[in-house]
Length: 473
Image: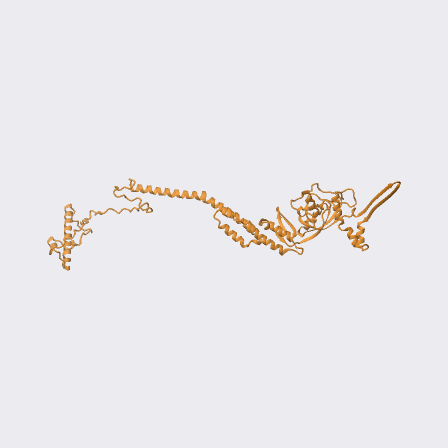
């Protein structure tokens, strides 16, 4: 009813029409104001009519009768678009929301302080404070990186390098000791695991590798001695001495004693095998034959004089020695012998002068008393040819027992008596039969004229040991 009185139609109830129209009513300012007032009035009336219609349908009544609660007035509507002017948004354009804190990383930084006049805690603008905090954070991160890098390169890396060097040194030691037949020994894996689990260089270096390795090698080498001994209870031991391979033949008891006194460094380079020997004869001068005072069973070393070659003496000269040599030096070519521990199986002295025995011994005694005199004399003579005696014994012409008792150790006894009396035949030659490893036979034969027999004092013959005891007491 009210709409009809005011002359409004139903189109006005639909609110503001923002679409452009052909005609623009309200070009003047007064027309715009009238339109705005009329729209506001019409809107209020429409709201009242809606409330009245709803309340009637529900049968609600106010406590005071027919009066109804007047609804809250609606917000002021926007003016219609006239076509020439554009309605501007009543709200400010949305601003980008700044993260709470520095890039959202540290909450709480960069917030406004209530009552602070739009500023931050530093009194400046929020952008300035944020830049300051970001700079401090970047500086702190750079400082942390520098400190960490300095610790790594100055402390951690050198320490780890020292630890790795200590571990590698011990591992190399284990690999050098546990090689060959002990490469798969369980003790090797135990030592390697213990080394790898070390956390300090001192702990890695303190691991005992030599002790367990020595025990393992001693057990292995003793087993080899018992397995590889020959029919004469001997073994052949090969070892490296100053870069030169040496071979000796010793008894089982001596080999076991040698193993007991050696450590893993020596035992790992020691090879024990069954003796493979040959007997080789050598014709030597008295000087080359260790002075001729060696006997069967003695052990000698064979050295080589590389700069001198001694010729065989002439057998038809008795008062002088004719030797020719190609050099004046007789120094050995090496600090180690060509053969160590060669065994003397036999020794023969030449019979050029020593085989003929012509000796006369006369004792006379005369006593005179009161023109009575008595005299007595005693004489002994010996005229013997040793070679003829040997031939007689060989032909069974004489009793061999008597001859054996006369000539037993004749040559050695003659050499020993010459040693004791300090007089002897220096021109005598000797045939010495030595037992040596087969692998050294060829080199001995090729250098036969340059060999020198040397008696080691550690395995000296009986007469030499007696003399040493008398000298050094």
